[in-house]
Length: 129
Image 1 (cartoon, rainbow, N blue to C red):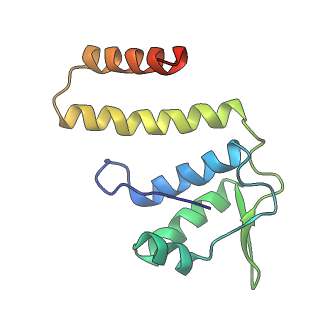
Image 2: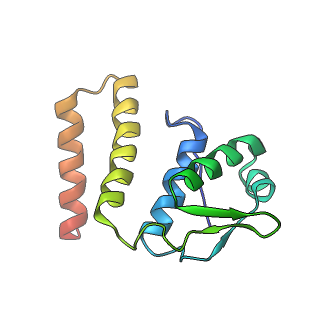
C-alpha cells in the first residue's frame, strides 16, 4: 500500500490517509481481506505520529472500510467498498475538490479562473493532448 501525504494541502493528515485508503479500495487496488500496514509501520514510513495513523484507522473501521482483529492486524473489510462504487468515487473527488478550493482561496484565485483551469485540464487529459 502506497500512501503519499502533503502536509501543506489544507487537509489534515489523518483525512489524507482515509481518502487514499478509500481510493485504493474503491479502485480495486486493495482487495477485501488484504492486510494494511500496522500503525507504527505506516507512521514510520510517512514520518508522522502513530496517533495520526491510529485515528485514520479508527475512522476507517467505523465506516466499515477496514476491520481490526486483536493480534492479527488490520485488513480491508469483506463488506467494505465495492470496487469503483460511484458514491465512494464521488466522495473521494469531493474531498479532493475541497482541498483544491481551499488552496485556490489561499492563493487568491477567483472561482471562475479555477473552474476554467479544471475544464482545460480535463479537456487536455480526456482528448489526450
